[in-house]
Image (tube, rainbow, N blue to C red):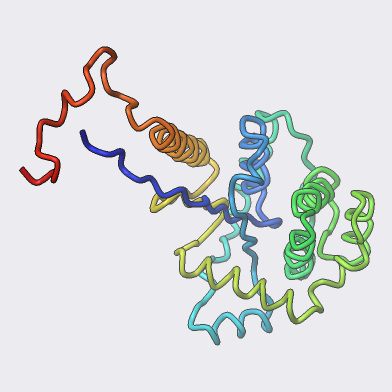
Length: 246
């Protein structure tokens, strides 16, 4: 009787960005069917780096692969996201980004995640940006939004000034380069890759399949005779000599 194949349970990855409405809506939709999403996947922030972070990424032989969209694509996105938000019954206020500094919200999220508060920080910032249309790249806005969520808003607003947090942010963007990420949302389950709002259902299905495989493996380990037909006498499958080599 063959032994069950060992299934390696790996943590799925999900790249997100506070800048992207598709990232926001995809995560909102996934959490409706999988409330434990933040606990099941490893999240990585992805953003347009400032010159300091960009140089740090280059120093590690990596680069930022995202290409800025054209005016035509931007106009399409405005209409498309409004349509998707209505379909998901989400109230959306499109923010106006004037010279945004994306290090601030994304590194604030990294700092909050170190304290086990990444999900609360995430919820506070997407609510501020996409529900109220606020500029979360401003220190005061970010501080107020995260303070209202019970976090240390002033500390999080200053997280981008912390060299250690900056270094972790750089590592996240280097990892994105190594994972061939070119936009968000972008998910990994094992070797499978899923990009874009329309592929996140497949991403969840792949996670569910991995969970089921792990559960089957655990059950097989707990019951070595699982799958053997009932009523078969012990030894019926093995008439070999004691040495096992014939």
